[in-house]
Structures are given as C-alpha cells and as structure tokens.
Image (tube, rainbow, N blue to C red; front, side):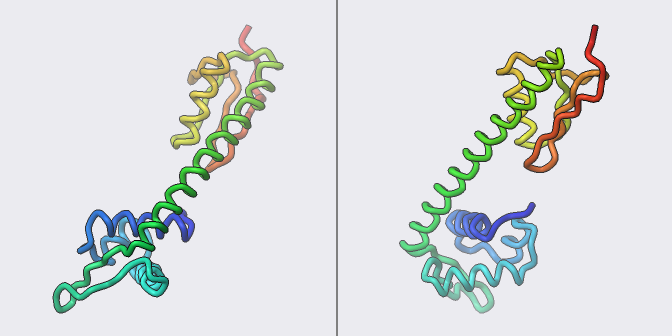
Length: 159
C-alpha cells in the first residue's frame, strides 16, 4: 500500500478518533510502515495542534484530536473523495476510448485482467458500453496495471 502523506494522516486521525488508546505499533501495522514513520507523523500532527498526546499510564499515551484536527480530518476526507472520483472518471473515460478501438476492430467481448477497484470500474464500464466480459481466448484483453489500463488487440476476432 503506497499512501501519500495526506492519506496516512487521514488514516491516523480516523484510527485515533476510533480508539484514543491505540498504540503506534498498531497504527504502523495498519499503515504497513515502520513505527518510526508513525511516530514522525504523530509528532507532526501534535506540533501543528491537530492532536494532543496525554500520558494515560507510565508508558502509555492517549491521543486526543483537537478541533483543528477534526477540521483537518474533514478537509482530508473531502480531498480523498475528490481524488477517488477524479480517478473513477478518468478510468471510465480511458476504458471507453479503449473499447471504441476494440469495437472498431469488430469485437463485442473483452477479458479484464486484474484484481482491484480499477478492474471493477473497467468491468462496469464494459457492461455499460455493451461489451460482454468473458474469459476466452482470441478476444481483446483489458489489462489493469496499477492505475493504468492497457488494451491488447493482437488476437483474432471471433467469426
């Protein structure tokens, strides 16, 4: 999982809001990063006034999101949703263009290779555009690689 700094901070704020007694090791595991990375983010959030750290026990901290932190969480959530919607629209447009190429070559079926949300968007777009999504030989393949989609037309159309 490759997250931007803003996405990491959003996840941290959400998890702290859900459990103020959460520890940095648990946060690091959920983000798939080192504890030192979580420590850096939390220190940054504390220094900017978004989170307060209070000693709950001798070696245990309790994190409290400040009103500024709540506002930051809202901004980051909106930014995340806007980015996801942009990615959704761009993916749909890209797939529509690729399907137009396949249709021009006489195809009405396509195989989608990939297991991600992007692949799901591809499949839905194919169905919307009147393409049957099947796992057959000799049909075009939409290959999902991260955030990009490639069309492979090298196979012969069905007769």
